[in-house]
Length: 91
Image (cartoon, rainbow, N blue to C red):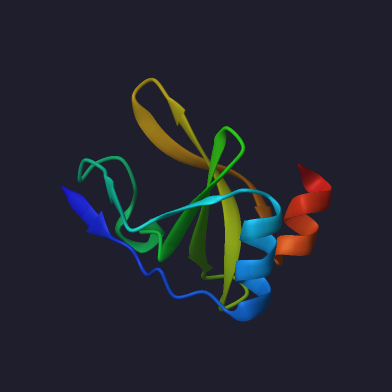
C-alpha cells in the first residue's frame, strides 16, 4: 500500500531541509499492518540516513516529528520532537 504524503512545507521548514540536505518524500510504501491507523504519517523527509515523519500526537493534539526506524521489516517510531530545532539538537 502506498501512502501519498504532503509535500507542502513552510519557508522556515524548507530552509531547514535545504540546510541539512534533506530529501522530501512524496510517497512511501507501507503494508497495512506496519503502522496503526492513527499512526499514518502526514509528511516524511530523509535526514541523513534516517526517515523523519510528521505524525499526529493524540496526547497533545498536535503534529510532531518522529524518527522512523525499520526493525524486522516493519517501521516503528522512536524518538519524537515537537519542532525541527529540537529534532536537530536531539539527533
